[in-house]
Amino acid sequence: MALFDMKNFNGEVFGAYVDQVENLNRNALLKSGAVVEKPEYAAMLPDQTGGNYITVPIKARIGGTPDNYDGSTDIKADSRATYTHGRVVVGRAHGWTERDFSTDVTGEDFLPATQEVAEYWDDVDQRTILAEMQGVFSMNAKAEEKKFVSGHTYDISSDPEKNVFGETTLNNAVQQALGDNKAKFALTIMHSQVATNLENLKLVSYMKYTDDKGIERDLTLATLNGRTVLIDDNMPSETVEEKYVRAGKGVEGALEVVEDSAEAGQINKADVTSDIADAEAGDYVVKLPAGVKYTTYVFGNGAIEYTNCGVKVPYEMDRKAEKNGGQTTLYSRQRKVFSPYGISFKAPTMISPTDEQLKDGKNWTLANSNEAESEKYFPEKAIPIARIITRG
Image (cartoon, rainbow, N blue to C red; front, side, top):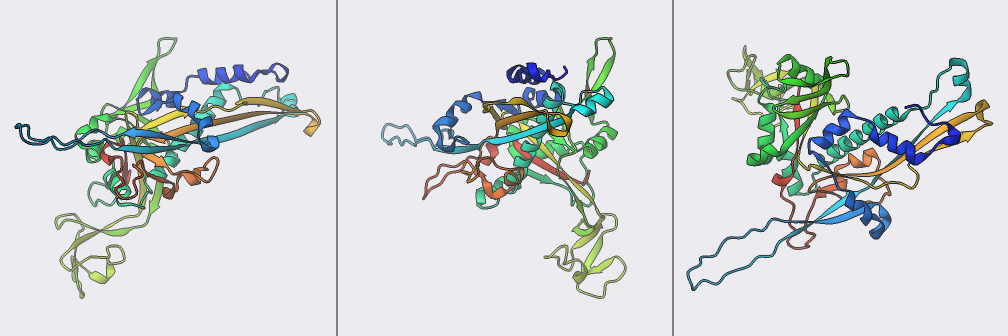
C-alpha cells in the first residue's frame, strides 16, 4: 500500500495497515511460542512509579519433604516463595523525510509504505531482543547469575576437533540447559554462516509455500531438529586470534607440554601459558587457528514475554512547505516490553534504556524474593533460554 496523502493521513488507519502486514520473522517468533504476548501488563504502567517499569510476582512451585503419616508424627508446612520480576519499557522513535523535488524529478514517492515501516520495526524489535540477550548472558554479580550463564551456555568454539555446529550440537545444548525439560525449546536464531554450514550438511530444511500461481517456493524460515530457525546476520560474532587449547593425546597436531628443551612433538610450557595459564608439563595442546566465533540463541516456549504498551501518537506526518522547496516527514513511535521470563531488569534510573544499556549485564538479575537474609532466586533450570558458541 502506498503512503496516504498528507492531507488525508490518518495515523490510526496507517497503524492498522502496518499491523496487518504479513511479516515472516515476527510471525515465526510469535507462532513458535518463544514470544508470548502479555497485553494485560500495559494497564499496570500508569499505576507503577514512572510509567516505564513494571514489577510483577512469579509464584514459586510448592515443595518440601513429605512427613511420615504414622499417627504420631507432626505434619510440617512450608510457605511458597514469591519472586519479583522487573520489566522495563523500551521506547523507540524515528522519522523519514523526503523532499518534493525528489518526486518531481523522478516521479517516485520516496516516503516509506506500510510494508517498509512494518519491516523496519520488526528489525528494531529483533535487535532489542538480541541486546537483551547479550545483557542477560553478561550477568556475573552473584553466584546464581553465574550458574545460569554457565549452565545455559554451550561453548565448543575452543574444541580442537568439533568446534562447528553439527548434528548433535543443538540437542546437547538444550539438554545441558534444561535437562529433561529440553523439549520446551522451540526456536533458534543463528547467523547465516552457521545456517549455511548446516545447509551443506543437509541438517536444516526450509519451509515452503505455494504462491497464487501454484509454484512452490522456499521461505526464509528453516527447521532444525523440528525447531524453527531464524537467520539473522545481526547475531553476535567475534574474530578471534589463533591460540593454544588443551587437546587429547591422539588429536592430530597435538604437542606434549614440557618444562623446557622441547623436542619434536613437544612444546615448552612458557610458550603456551599466555593462552593456558594453568598448563602443566605432561598436558597436550594444539594450536587452534584464527577464526570467527558465532553465537546462536535458543528459545523455549514463553521465553520472552511481550507487551505493546502503546504511545499517544504512533504515526503522524509533518509538512514544511518552506524547507528545501517543500518536504514531508513521517514520524513513528513505539513503547514495548520484551521481558526474558525469570530474569529481571533492575529498577532503572533511565526512562527508556538504550541498546547499550540493555547489553550491560549489571542491569539484569535473576528474579528473586528480595529477602535480605535468605534471598531465593528463580530456578535457572526453569528459564528456557540458551546460547551456543561455535566456529561456524
